[in-house]
Image (tube, rainbow over all chains, first blue to last red; front, top):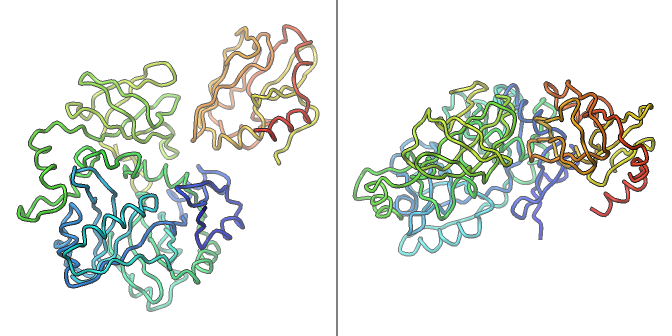
Length: 362
Length: 129
């Protein structure tokens, strides 16, 4: 059974090439993935992300529950609308999913989790809710559109009511606000300025059309992947999964170790891993010659083998980039080898961040 | 349905061949093939003067999605390659049967052309994919 988002007809109208994405029929591109990528880097593009799963957590124990469930500490969130990126671990310290949590009040949070992991995420969240007074409610009645790029906010602004414009005025990165019928957040997955907009299902097609009319280019999952990889953002299922520690997935910054008495799931395992210092790490790779570093290729280093978790051609840079999991002793600036199409090539190790706000950052 | 010009010959591995006269042919990949591959980012071509045999992997089309070998549809000597693809690999996407050509071959044996598919045969072969 293939799921379709509320914008499915709009994709067909726009000439999308549709593919199966974890049970959802989604646009991979609308003609040229590279042109869509460039639209986001230089102007404004939009993605249908309605397949993503919105889960509201409410109740007197909402804060206590989330402080147990995820590795970052929601108690740090003090301003209404502030968002937090983090991971949800199993008891073995592996990443069940990465997610964004929006704080409204200490008894009301909104989570956005991956669609591919929806079923197991909800099962896990419900299982862990035992003993907490919380309600966990999926909100499938919304569509979601990510509008990204240097001109994204200006183009969205032309569609907003005066009240909505007021609500988002001066909103800092990683915030969300309910503005009329829209929930508008300054989050994204591209390394550009922009919004992610949660819209009631019956208004989604209309919003998409208005954005189209405002000159926002429809972009598919292909461009979404090259954009997020250039930005050095992880993709669940490739760069980490249930067998991978957040310490081995560039997610250490999303762990709140303080206060030490917060007993989040996976804490003991992570503490032991940190003390041992033996987890591999996720780095960036750069290859400036002809050829593309592909997901799954072997990385050869003096300290042992690693693997490319995500590799692609970077349209912004004009050469290949990748994220790779390598032994911890590999240093930034090192040259390592990748086995590419039967030959070994030299690639440079850098921090896993390649492009931000349209510019090369290494 | 992709465009499949009737004046060309085809290999089931999605190369097209155009006869230029004097035993010279131009080789490229079909519109259907570029559509499957997606945006082209690099094209590795053979060297001029390379002797190639039918079925050899002689070039690579690398797209955002994958690297794909391109096979020699005929035997002979490479006499010219499309140098524009060095800076503009996207020509393979935008004009697969024209400006996106890959290389030209001086045929070793013109009779080899008879073994290739005509447009209808190629259309049938991709229907079976």
